[in-house]
Image (tube, rainbow, N blue to C red; front, side, top):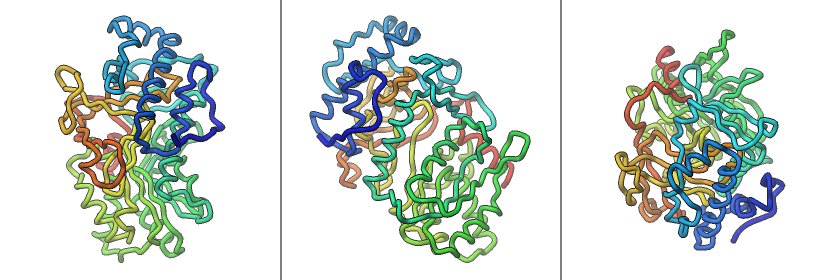
Length: 391
């Protein structure tokens, strides 16, 4: 198995040795029976960890009459008591003392209920290291090639806890920052406005400099920028072919302006000169920080550190491949909060790797959108509302 020593160490190595070994795997899409066995052993460790340290999860396990001995194969992970992601919008639960919290992130933007997620050093840096491994596997770590950055995310106040802004700024470490422009600007009264003209000016300035550009953040704002460029008849820009666009956040709350992903990618290539294979989307959340990043065929393959369970919308039992249901994630990486098995509010379908054909050996999932209606608003919803004001 492809593992390596790590400077990161689980909080209690004796209790979480399999968690350590699993999260040390550098090959993001490793497939083997050994990896499955290791994942199952790590899940047993993390379940015991949260039972011992979180009364809420202990009571949930007792209520559902779950026992660790019921986990005999990797397919049994559906039996693990899960927590709906929306639970974290209403409750603060931790499996560590407050003194061990090294990062506190929220999931919402300027409006809506906020998930309150707490991370110890191991949990957040383990998730960040997963991004390192995936970026490295695609050849996107270029320490000798500076880049300019357009960040379609929130300009951070000094004490910002917002998850999307934290993520986008973190992604700037993979290529040295020559210049950067954040598009959602602070207004001075606690809010943000989208600066479309400043964004277009930054794109033109960066293009003239001839360095690769890296664009991160909400796809809706990238689309709005390109749409405005077309309306103003701005000459298409030609960025170096090793530029990179990595999007995240979706179109939630702004479906009337959304376009198909393939159409957006075509527009990017037309107006910015960046090839399709260098345009990728990402999926993740503050409640579940394992990164899901598109392959070259633009599918979200499941990395070795997690498993995806699609649940029937009525019975919550697992459904078969290619059947739609609630999107669920299982991963043993998180020690700070009992979010090792979460069910999202998204509808999705899981497909076998052969349906993609990119060469990766793990299944992939397709997200169909939010299930039902809710007053809860994500970062993307808040951003989309801002976009509506600006358009």
